[in-house]
Length: 205
Ligand code: GLN
Image (cartoon, rainbow, N blue to C red; front, side, top):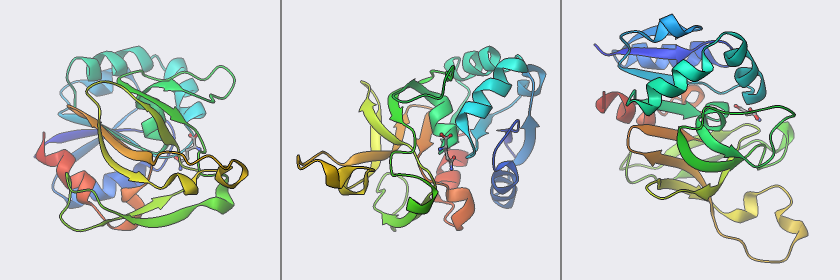
């Protein structure tokens, strides 16, 4: 069984561990650089990306984790995990950085605040023949997609925070992206029971 690390300094770690183990993986919480040894993949959970970034810095995990992913360690990030993987954050918290291993720019809380959380069934042909049920909780969206980054799913721009205020039609907002061995979703498959993305991630390990 593949050994999958779950970034465990903050976020919905337990939910990912549950899904990954139910799908036959072995899991290990990752809190420091030494925890990366021997992993076949790493998952970054949902939570609060500014806290994750700060704690990863304090724990000396940030650079080793970024190096490992750059060196080929497959990674999957959900929501805050997507923000952690991104190269750029349009609206970071003060002092907030990221791992910079996925060439996209994200907008935090792109769909509004907690009360604006929503669910949607998304067509994600690259990952599942059936629509993927997605829960968005203070979710980010991708606002710039770098060369070589595939958009796996998007939602109508009308969902975006402030979309009503500005009459100009805008493009759909990518909410699932993949660049080789790095995948990220704005939503949280670990809380919905739709495990298509986890299955696809494990298939690649
Ligand atoms: N808004 C959070 C952040 O900026 C992400 C929310 C989530 O992971 N559910 O990190």
